[in-house]
Image (cartoon, rainbow, N blue to C red; front, side, top):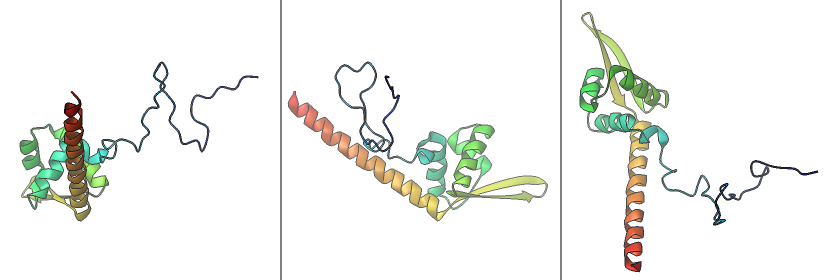
Length: 139
């Protein structure tokens, strides 16, 4: 009887070569890449923009964010909601007369997440510069 497995057995910690990879080099595991260590919630362009502009402004309205980030109502609301669910931003809804007003603020955990993301990006850039310098030295 032949038993075939499409993935590593339970508890196995090694990466297998990719199908069709004739080099036999193992593929990178999830924790191996500095890029994979980036917070996916923050990394998306609109969400990174929201966090960045709120980091330098105490409060911004939905209209302010929409104008600054040059995005649509739907796109902004989806991304803002994801950040709110993660408790990176707070959203306050009120009325100015009869006009609805939605305001966003960065939370302490949102500020920490942005700072951690920026630190990881800076580290990644530095390591790529070092790697690039080593590669150029080999030519």
